Amino acid sequence: MKNEAMGKEKVFEIPRVVIAGDRSSVGKTTVCIGLLGALRERGLVVQGFKVGLDYIDPGFHTLVSGRPSRNLDGFLMSPEVVKEIYIRGCTGADIAVIEGVRGLYEGLNYFDDVGSTAQIAKILDCPVILVIDAGSITRSVAAVVSGYKSFDPEVLISGVILNNIGSERHGEKAEKAVERYCGVKVIGKIPRKSDLEISMRHLGLVTATECKNRWDDFNSVLDKIKRSVEENVDIKVLFDVAKSARALKTPGSRIFHAKTGRSEEVKVRIAVAFDEAFNFYYHDTLDLLALEGAELVYFSPIRDKKLPSGVDAIYIGGGFPEIYGDELSSNSAMRNSLKDFYEGYGVIYAECGGLIYLLKQIEYKGSSFEMCGVIKGLARMNGEKRVVNYVVGEFQKDCILGKKGDRFKGHEFHHSKILLENMANVDFAYNILRGEGIKDGMDGIISKNCLASFAHLHAASYTGFAENFVKSARRYF
Image (cartoon, rainbow, N blue to C red; front, side, top):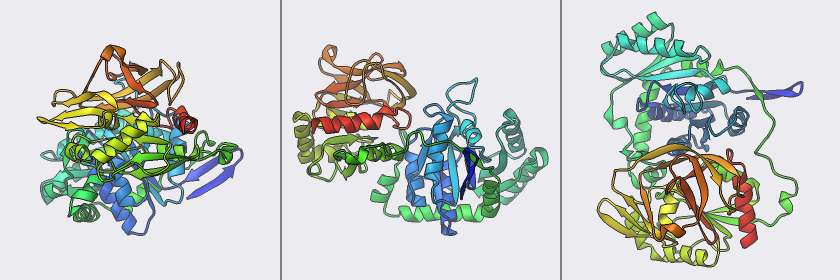
């Protein structure tokens, strides 16, 4: 890695590559996991990134690479912030592997690349390896690659990995077609192997935390994925592609810096719920809370019987509380500890799965589970509702995260319906300008010093998040 002055600007050099797909479910995550493992085994320090707001894929990157994976999103973040997160994340790394989202050109709109993998590749001036599900096609693969290559000349497609290859002859024919008609090298041909897949669930993959804690032979699955990639992808050529990335001009620090006088302020302890049920957090959000003066302590709503001692605030992120409804419900000691903290006007912030945990009840697959009862209502999950949206919201009143009139971008990602008691008197913090929210475009339930919403926020996008959360924890401890 090289980072040196060039006049008032600086340049930043590190090998980097985007792993993109022609569409969803072509095997990008499996390929990335294998590449991260194979590169790390070669003694390289590997940094993973994920395009978009997904929580699950970065969890696997982190597990395999040994370094926190980070999200890059061109809708939530300016190009300068994307670069800042990328460069900060790469500190000490030898190579960066950036996993795309959906198809290479899929984003917010049909008419531009905002929110897409292509947008991030252009912001970071990064070569792209295109992963294609080649099952049942050969010459047609060349047509796909040709179309993707010509669609946006600013996106540099520098190699192709063919997935789901049925036989050696199938792979050879598809490879020759791509190289003849497209002038792009096929750097990998991965055979069809169902035992390399990671289990799917209603919102995506099973999380890395769950796999690590509950899947006895998960390490052997990761090892099979790594070996398959090593055997079927030319790692040297991929590294050469990554080295072809040009130096980036680096922006100055806009977000990630310790503020003057921050060290003199009293530290606050924020308890972060983290286990199989709750693990949807952006690492950069946690870093920004720490930079604001928060000491983060972790606890498990499944296993621990009480909150950590001396905490000033609680952060409950998203996850799958419905899957662990029985265990969460059985742990009445933790539910009571959290309810007591709330009744004492402790500061609580909860997103999506965290919101559901704070309700009185979850109804899921014919079963009902008692939750914390902080918010009077229930979450119903009957399979009929699935919401995945970018969100734009505005605070309609002051609360622990912001002031009336403040705006934010975020996303919502759930399949539940919230039924609140006495809905007419519910106090909502957010007016959702884009997205659904909890009810009629309203989100962010306020109750005492608790704020709970469907909307997920990223602190590098809504920059008031960390400062306001920590200030609120200080104010009320």
